[in-house]
Length: 86
Image (cartoon, rainbow, N blue to C red):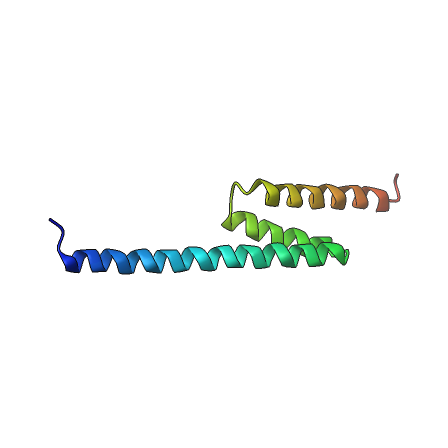
């Protein structure tokens, strides 16, 4: 049988982990929002940086990965258009 003290300790650890997860999710959302703001302002480098950080914290988020991929493709195409050799 598990003692009430051990159950209490597990509960505290679980609560701390839940708070950390919630903070991480909140931070990911702030990075996504920041990236969208930068993207709409034409600040592709900043948008890409924000979304790269968000992907690091939330790997496997397909919607976020798609945002990042689109921004990187747009930036690549834009840079090609700016190249005087083309």
